Amino acid sequence: GSITLTFDGVIIDGPGPDFVIFENGFDDYFIECAFVEVSADGVNFVRFPGQSLTPIAVPAFGVIDPTNVDGLGSKYRLGYGEPYDLATAGLSQVTHVRLVDIVGNGSRLDSQNRPIYDPHPVAQSAGFDLEAVAALNFRTWRTLPAGTFSASGTNATAMTHRPDGRLVLGRQGNLLLQDSWGQPQLTALPLNGITLDPSFVAARDLNNLLVGAGGSSSGGSGIHAVAPTSGIVTSPLATLQNFAGCYWKSSLSHREGWIIAGSNASGSHNLTYVSLDGTVSGALTQTLCSYSAGVATDSAGNLYAGLYELLPFPPYSDDTNRVLKWDITEVDAAVASLETSTPVPLTRASSTPLFQFDGAASVTIDAWGRVWATGFASSQLQVYDPTTGSSARFTPDHDPLPGVTDVIYQVAAFNDPEGIPSLAFLAQDEIGTAGTPIVYGTAPLTALRVPQDASSWRQHHFGFSLPPAEEATVWGDAADPDQDGLPNLLERVLGRHPLHSDSAQAIEVEVTLGRLRSDFIIDPDAEGAALILEGSNTLAPNDWFTLAELHGSEPFQAASGILVTTRPEGRWTRVTVTDNQFLSSTPQRFVRLRAQPLP
Image 1 (cartoon, rainbow, N blue to C red):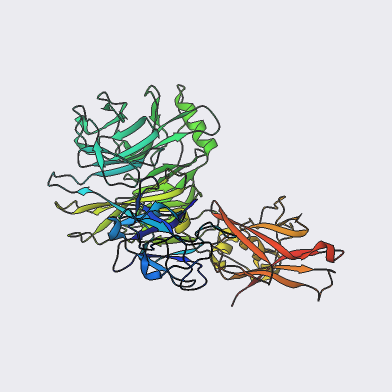
Image 2: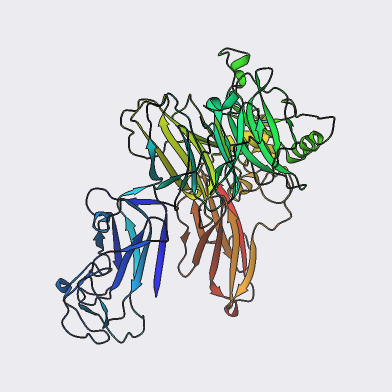
């Protein structure tokens, strides 16, 4: 058998050993072996060299001289691990570690074609017993080189991802497709005579891309369909100024197409809709601001657009880098109106202002509904969570970019080939200095958490003004304004809305193998509160005792005999707690959830 482990980030080749594997041998001489393999993409694995000098077969529970074994899982007893250096495998970073159990009868060979012997035939616990894999050199972001700037006079870059997770990169007059996921090799797509200064790249499916030709295109205003084999379609799908663009599909109707951000309304910024075949095109919004910014849609078809004002003083600058949202019903209606002779474009006043970022030249919506943005005034990635009102800034942990004094980023949300919701960045020198590198990086959303504190959560749901007289009934921890039986503090820890009475049970309980099993969902980003699962046999006030307890993002602490398991469900975490009390020994059993603030 084998087991493959992944991580919220990447193990990198750093000083000394990069990761360690632990087995559970009960003394220095009981050794069970496994091949150790690593991969940077989950598909292509490299096996570490292993040495076995054990000369004869080893019976079940037999012993091995540990000096005769090396590189085969772990030759050390429980609590001590065997170290591995990625340089030995010729890799700079890996996302997967795989262990393949070795049948120890000599039929498996080490890296020098010598037979490998370990206890055989196996008895009771069969074969290699994995305790842990510990990462010593680790990064949140997997990074890859995306090229180097040439002295072409432009510094234009753009990126998107195909549905198979592969990067599509626009770079200084070229359009490139990543050969395989997790690998740096890029293949140039045919330009077919089109001159590119790529302003954006967007993807509909595996075979349909759209690229903004940018300022160097004929007329400086073309957007072109692209096929991954034949390349750019020479006849533009539409002729309009383009700064950013994305694919849009309605969850309410059959409509789908492209939404382009540019200066198409008397020199001011607005959004334009273009159907897939280019037959329907027109202003989707009225003027939004004086200069172009980012645009994005989510899976439902809601629309998000950034603002930017050229005049750097109030009132013009007050909303610079703010992101607006239009609901799918509004967007679908506006697109439908373009199919008639009486278009009704969206207005800025009809939008919902979400958040004012440090920069909003690049905007994306991740699979958890969080809004990410960055821009020329920012050297970080910034995220806002509309569910909780929390925000955070992230600086990707890539190597320094030689020769770059002012790093700017682009950001894009996508699913990797294993379906894992992820985020990507593109980092470059702001002015595109010749010889400076361009770096691409990705991270799973589970590694990009946004801590949620009580203050931001209250302000998001109850407003910035929190009258003291309303603490007990509206916004306080013990208040229950929606009258659903869950006080605000418990609503926050469970990831629920304090003003929307939720018909779904906060905790589900069933009998499994004679014991109660409690199941509930929590918000792992909620800070400053303890969540406590308690049990009782009588419901008497003094008969409640703790079964399991969670303090913030720390692991659950459980009473003796209590089994706690957790697993991610999108941005939430599902918790299952199995009681230590058999129902056959007590006539009744109760459980309850309680939250209390932490100091």
